[in-house]
Image 1 (cartoon, rainbow, N blue to C red):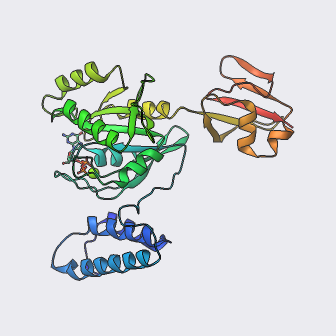
Image 2: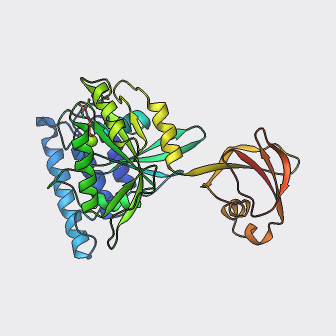
Image 3: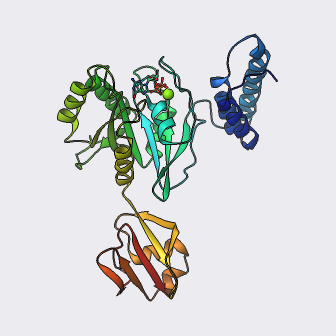
Length: 328
Ligand SMILES: Nc1nc2c(ncn2[C@@H]2O[C@H](COP(=O)(O)OP(=O)(O)OP(=O)(O)O)[C@@H](O)[C@H]2O)c(=O)[nH]1
Ligand SMILES: [Mg+2]
């Protein structure tokens, strides 16, 4: 084994060992290849890895498995899945590395990221999954990115404030529309009509807020798109305004947290139940155990500064932070 393999390589190798399907294995090997330092000492290893990929691909094709390109999907984890999309080199991967414990490759040239890479972002007492993706660019957008974006709960559209951010936003919106994805922010805007169009909630992120001309470009971005999307000016590198962005991501997911308690005991604040905004006491019960849907008679509810164990009906709407005691 050649020396000096970076930790990202070892992490990818660990994922390779855990991979079950050929597609997962290929993905892990591709991640290994992406981070392996290229020099004399690693030549043989790189050759081996490439041969393994071709063999695995042969296997999947023989089995009539998905073709290359259709291979990537990201299993969702945590309270929601957020896709990072944007032009090349805008800092999507660096943003992922700042918000999660993931260690993507970050480099000052375009098309660094080749495969999806998930990471978990801690937010207060929950975790939200972010997925870093290869860039969008006319003629070079990997078609499978569309599938991942369609499946996500929220999109972070990341642009670079130093390089004409307005053109970047238009380019990305165009690429997504070509894949029949329409981004929506604050206002429920009418999407273009057509078969198979999906509408995704999005937050616009202007990155490299520390860079030259970024302040003026940021103001322009807010002026032009602030009506349509929540706009966040950040610097991933300098870790500026990331707290605000994290809160916006949480709010963009449209979820709430409910805590449960057993009569006579203190609430369990360690493990919130996460549900969509607009859920009822009944739905909380159902998410805990399907039998509870039928058995639930009523609940008592505690709400900060408002309710103190009030008896509420099953149809009662819960709010973020509520504590409920189910009576079956
Ligand atoms: N000044 C400044 N540079 C940044 C910031 N964030 C990222 N960069 C730099 O921008 C370059 C690209 O960063 P990446 O994170 O690799 O960009 P990416 O969007 O993932 O690029 P692709 O994978 O090619 O799509 C790197 O040189 C980073 O160091 C930032 O907030 N400020
Ligand atoms: Mg990247």
